[in-house]
Length: 356
Image (cartoon, rainbow, N blue to C red; front, side, top):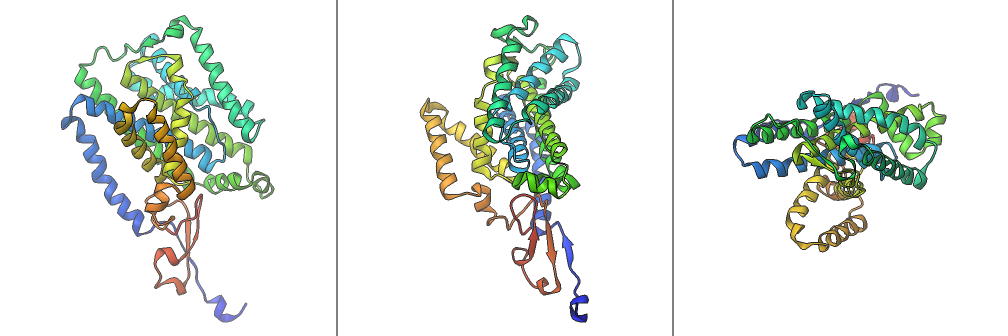
């Protein structure tokens, strides 16, 4: 090594100008969203609860598939567990629904733990099908429990002591908090020591194991967190509708929605599922009156995005990763990069390569 090379100092940075701008914009946005129950009617609040649930579901599926490399089409299992867990904890056990909601998410995470030991014995398409089978088994099991309404479903009575306006506002705030928590947990998890391991496992499980990555442990953490997050979304959906049925809460349609959200938004980024959820929500509102054509249009949109925007809509908006509001990678900056833009500096990313 020459003396000139020895004097070169490399700086490692994670944040960038775009991430600080994102933080500055997020704070007033959250304040506005928190104040909305005082400004808009019940219908708008209930509709936005659906949007927040979609953000949670998209974020969890992206964590599972985009970062963990596990393509699941059975996440509806934990949506149903979260919804029915809320009914059981709040109505049967008599716990306050404000406490029952997070406990329902914990219950979904606990249920996903033993399931992981079963489905992790499989890989690829077999893994995906196994998760769907598990969801169907849970649906059939819940349908046999008379205390949970059997196959006809059950109503959530825990909110009966709330004035309607107050109940809707409380559910709205809970759902907003759930969406923020889902994004925050994903962000912190990907910035932790486990984050780089997740990406290595997704790219090549055998190579990651050979380098000392605890593959099974890391995958199980992702699987349980995604299960708990999906259960939290299920509890929000149940709180919003006040009535649930096995066929609706354990429907594979939810997995289709999650996949669509992540594909059109951009897999492998935190921002992608948020953008995808907003786009999916808007399409739902616009196309709701088209009947079966609604699903056809969604399919066409997904095909167009996959063919022409492999990075999703967020990949297009961010200039293929030049803008990152949630930076989870590292940027290596040498003195020669001092005058360069972030996009020109060397970046080591977690997930999709990013310059921010």
